[in-house]
Image (cartoon, rainbow, N blue to C red; front, side, top):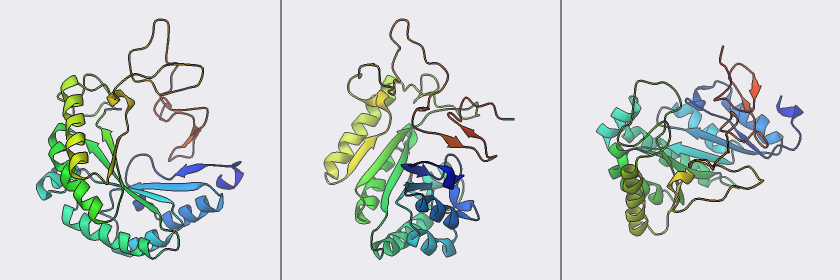
Length: 246
């Protein structure tokens, strides 16, 4: 499948779940790299087997985003329900050391899913990332895509739209952390949290705001013009959210 792609630009080897559990991960990274594409991976890292750390660090991976939503042990355990913040620290420090030995180190950054319960952890996460020489923290405000038991009444006024209180809380927390750590880039990866709305035009664009009169979203919240998803059963789809799972 990879060899059949024409001029792929970015290959992201994950969507949901922990990608490092895949038994042929290193070979998958190598095959993706051979296409000439930029290769990315997301991992919580704390549960990665110790024997996989060095091969992962020395693989031709271009970018690894580590999911870190808390640094305090109790909060980490309640959010992840496995492993520990201590093990995350050990794994990430070791990975960073091996990565520094590469001729061209991969990009290491942090993905932080923001909720009311863990906003106070953002400063500690940023401090840890800064100590490891990282530059970027990507903030993903919590959202719901499926009918799961967990609800987020303080954060969400619907599936993905934030309550105004949570929007203010997150923006305030980000400003405080930026002031304390001016060398770090904190990016909220949801345009709903931007200061102002962008304008719709002929080019496709993300639009989380109220739609203009007469406008409709057809069916897919992805970008079917430039991206595709390969599901775990091998199906290739434009949008994994609207695709009927059998």
